[in-house]
Length: 383
Image (cartoon, rainbow, N blue to C red; front, side, top):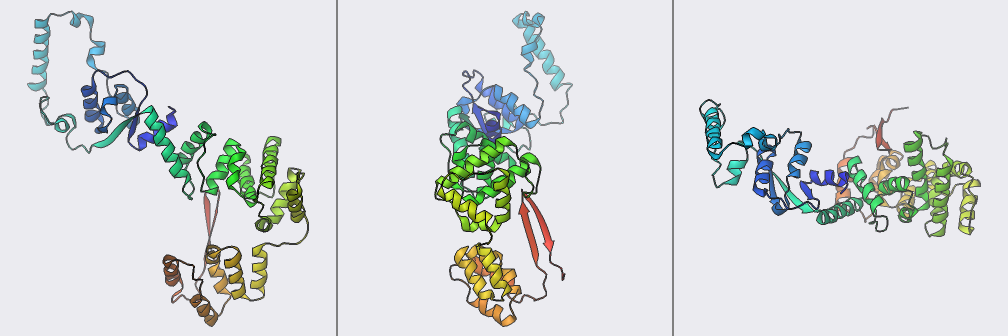
């Protein structure tokens, strides 16, 4: 099993038994794991192996010496039973008569394994041992849970998911987060991952590729290599073959689309592609936000709010709430909030109540911009 899987399972307190031969010294191994590392095996004790002691030593940074008998001198091995007994008595005397009694001692014959094996004041860490087959099933379940989340993954989680996707390209779980899907698509170049994306998401792919591989955070200035141009061209062709051409949303980044299509020298392959390319290159903008801004400029804030809710959804309306209310007088604001859309949950209504009840009109707004896992905060000024 790959190290990335083993490391991730170790963080979940799972050890892997990788087809090793049966361990003859099970009790001694369990005792060493408990004594040196405070590890208690709660499940799969029969799968324990001496090599796990070395693995725990590496993970915890503890130096566990080899058993003394591995390097025992041949001269000692040749002693008679009586001589060995005398030698043991001598060592016993040195330890118990001349040794340090500052530490609590216990008899090795005590029946309570925990008291005998674990050091004093040790918080035992519970681990389990799985076979390689069971561990693969556990990894598959973990990856499925990670991909079902709409939240972006941290680097450790993403490394695990990427390794799993590369190993199992024929059976990829559904991906809920567009952020994760875009990163996986770039790293694997597997076009089937794009089937859960829309045409408007292609600009996210271009932006991410431009930032991560070319260290350029300006999507208006592209300098993409020929192999990546071919990849993006194939991606566009696949998009136009399906029913995911949301041209209205693409209008929101019309200038970026125009520059991108020119940079990769895109040639449409079907009628859907021709309609899109012509829409991006000709004058005019039919995006929802363009119509929204026109209504805001005409001081028709209520109509602008209804447009956003109808075309983009209540969540987009909430994100633009401060902007809309800032253009209203006190009476219009109260009427607007009283007639707020009924499809909001109780939690959202409570958040609106706490935010706008008794709100001072002169409060400065705070804007947060997030891109490439970085965030910039801007505080509104009078200017």
